[in-house]
Length: 202
Ligand SMILES: Nc1ncnc2c1ncn2[C@@H]1O[C@H](COP(=O)(O)OP(=O)(O)O)[C@@H](O)[C@H]1O
Ligand SMILES: [Mg+2]
Picture 1 (cartoon, rainbow, N blue to C red):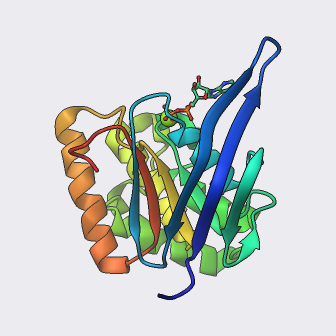
Picture 2 (tube, helix red, strand yellow):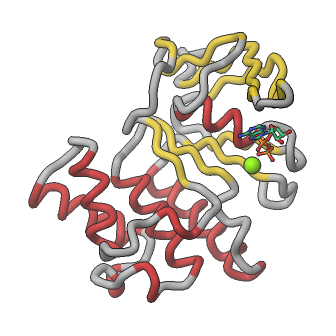
């Protein structure tokens, strides 16, 4: 077997609130290899989002280790892009294209023409070319999630982290988005760590 891209080993994650200490995950281990579609499946409250936040670098393990390419994760970075459940993860005053370009430029990934071309490429991949100059408030929930996916993919991260990205969509749109994501994966073979509580979605 090749080296895993992501190695989560015996990871315990805790929240300290004023009243108590919440253990969100207890000694969780798994490995994700390049090109994997890796699913974290479990009921609400079992610690999926917390694990994803830790892989994102937003939370430090109380015990255990999370390694990417063999190095411990210390902070958030453009090598791990997150797509959330909420529709409001876009900047409302920027267009679809500007949202994607902004991520590329702010992270230092690409600038100017190159950023613009990369944005157009991925906006096309999610079928939103006609809406590239639209603002988020004029789009449906499914379209906004497509923008968030395009933005995540345009960054060409080592791993795309998706936290129930379709959970707030209506059933038909959700199914359509699931099919689209599979097609995108067949096309691009990116590495994705996907969180869901739905067995059928998994
Ligand atoms: N910010 C927080 N502060 C305190 N407890 C939290 C916080 N976020 C989540 N938790 C608790 O951690 C546990 C795991 O939550 P979460 O990772 O959101 O689960 P899931 O995503 O699987 O539904 C739950 O018991 C939840 O109440
Ligand atoms: Mg969650």
